[in-house]
Length: 250
Image 1 (cartoon, rainbow, N blue to C red):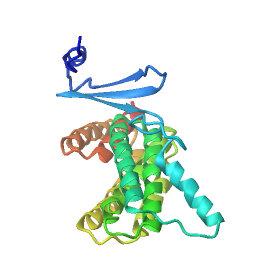
Image 2: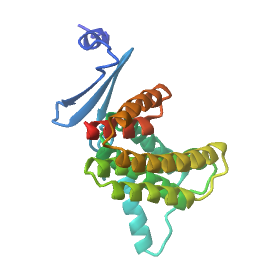
Image 3: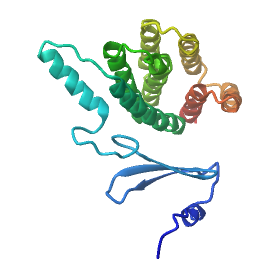
């Protein structure tokens, strides 16, 4: 009998609930998977390697393959040149990692976010260095945003260990790196650069304030109110910081 491809049975086995729409399972091959229940479907991400679970012949992901090519070319005295096809492939891989780290960031899996944002920052480095054709700004204009998420995630890891000084240092390094990025002549780059520096500066101030006032119950209440406002406007960086600090205070 020919299968219809109807997904109703799968969807009906896990009805959509916005408060319970993420689950972690083991794949048939033993891989760690994350599934997201959406109103009209389910997304599935591999938690290790490429988010789409694609297996490559020469490495775990394209970045690894191109980094080896870069190293071999330098050793031979040459300069790596990326073609339009290379650029498209790396851009598509970076998009998969973006989808995954955005969800992981909202869930508070900061070590995995650091891993994935490091991955995309390394892709940006390759594009910046070795791809000079038109279109490179499509990816590079988001570099300040990627570095911001990376810095905040590193800071959250330190805060979970009660190392607020290290957290502030990580945030300050993020600001310095963003200020030193190669200029991309797009409105998105200008917006993300100024916004990222402003938000990181704001988070530094929040960290300093939180640890000064941590003993005051009134401050705990104000944090809860601020968390609600941050979630309402989808300011996930601020919400993540506040949420974890509330846990710390409790």
